[in-house]
Image (cartoon, rainbow, N blue to C red; front, side, top):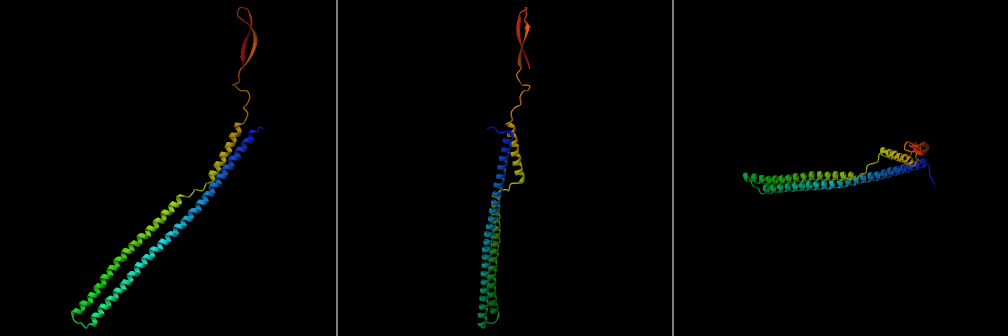
Length: 207
């Protein structure tokens, strides 16, 4: 069974259009799934960062509570030492020196606590910055896995290409036209006289 060239061209164009639409829909679904996965991963990254931030904050709070307790214990030791000195009934310059010694011990302990707190605070800030950088890197890695959403322009180009394929397929099936400048010449015979007076037949080629 022979089909008209127009029917074949239309069928070819429709098949190409269906394929273009199906491909566009598949890419759109894949892009939406990729976007959902990206947003979920960002949420997980944020939750992990929040837990790490809380751990850093708890660690710093523990250092400050410990320093506060040690400062309070130092104060108690100083007061006890001074109370012992005063209760001993000493007088003169010696008692002043003993009281000053207790204050110097407390001041030295407080300086040590302050230096330890400074180091702890520095570690705290470094830790917080490291957590932020890790979250940012994780977000960038997640973003690199996202699939781009296909554009309407791509679909239009696909449909246009399908239509062009249909036209070309229809034109390829059209029958060639008869006649033309390339047709072979048709020989026509006619009588003529040969040299010497003898009759003969000469073939003349004419279009």
